Image 1 (cartoon, rainbow, N blue to C red):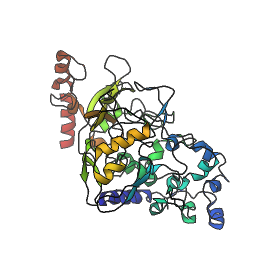
Image 2 (cartoon, rainbow, N blue to C red):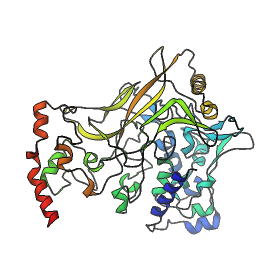
Image 3 (cartoon, rainbow, N blue to C red):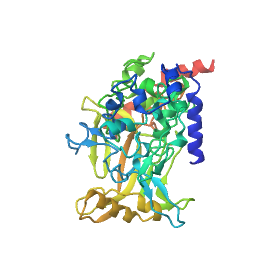
Image 4 (tube, helix red, strand yellow):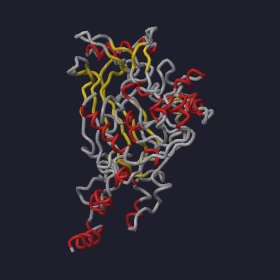
Length: 456
């Protein structure tokens, strides 16, 4: 584990201990009888294990109805999608032992490392065995020992994911805390701060500084997690959320001018002015690490280090082999301007049909040979004819976390100055409209008054 990941997890641990959780009923029963996995939970929560099997956290996929070039009868997600942040999926990169590298070392790796099962009962599995394989405590225990959760081989040679099913972990259960969520989500996409650059600490997220944790906003019912509609994140539990709801209204400001903007400007646009995480990966070029294994060459950025790009978004997604991003315009009556992190990934495309080819990470992780990974993935997927050629894909990630303190949010001049963050011409405004929107007449008096008040 890298020092960066360790520091992030320690930060989450400190946050998780700041609030005193209400003791979950049944603790004495668990201390007396021990913990036997989900069947212990079901003594008080019957049917919850079967319920969980029908969620995105277990299936890693769902049907989608807002993405171009998808089959409405097919489920999509980490299970089977191919795009250049991961360039693989649970099918191609199922948890496995990586072949020995030049130094003779081996390790386990796979996209489904965070799947809350035991790997024998894997992504999308059903039935009694799958129900009893669920790792309830990884989400619900504040004393979960993550060192006990690791891939290893069982007596039959099968790769399994072990779990912490200790009495101590089970006796300290409740609502998921920040660490429970971030142990997977903070390191998604291949490492710390890769996929989104998330750091859910009081320093980086204003909600956390006010004692609000993940499940306070993502209010779960029947294990269904409400989410937004990120152009990149397709799989969902059929429950969606926005800023406007329990905490915020459609007129969240005391200033009427700011409130007028909410019809066309998403909350995130002004309140998440920075982003972070990897901006680019090259899966055709694997770099050797200190441990002798290889990883795809990656350009990384710290939390809040980069500026987002702004685009109209009507919550439907353009999906082509070379572009995944928001659809919308200023005239469709449905769109708002949102901030996005732009990611660009290089992979191999099939010259015969233009599709993006998947990659099995096992061969290149051991040897650095990316084409061997393409060949292995093609064999797994039954692709007989292909001709790999390198190419780039652009992906837009929604900026939905790292909400800044109010004093650091964008103000009038942030957008309406000639060098402001919004490029009005690119957003569909005429030259005359753009000139009007970048004239100080719009904001001068308001900001001058604020300036005077701050000086007095």
